[in-house]
Image (spheres, rainbow, N blue to C red):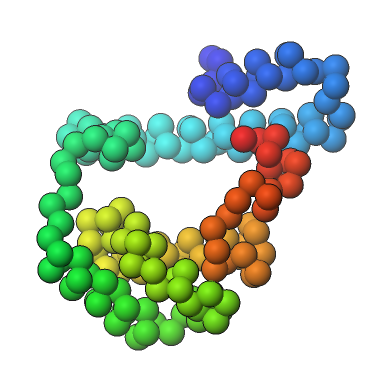
Length: 163
């Protein structure tokens, strides 16, 4: 078994550049490859538990095809208002920190609509997803970067090598 496409790309790349890779980088790449294999195995296992219809919908979602979300201006307005209400009610520290750094970023309707659309306007799921997103940004990029878009300048050499 050759593994998934990501693993094949890593293996191909390693063959081409093997002589120039320091041992520490090879170990890091091996760890990354093991993590990717574990993730692929987990996804395959979970996908196999789905019905044919559920699997088809999941693949359609992954490839951005399938049913289009029917939004109306009223639906957007109501979802954004409910989103704001739920956020205020939850009083999440990570959100409050982001808002104190750059309120316009976290209150931007287009930013919030990303989460609402990803969750078919299910507001509680959307808020949970946004809070998780901000938390992961803090974990991976630091507290000072949670209220702005991440750019290539925010990545170190190891991050860029994994792209």
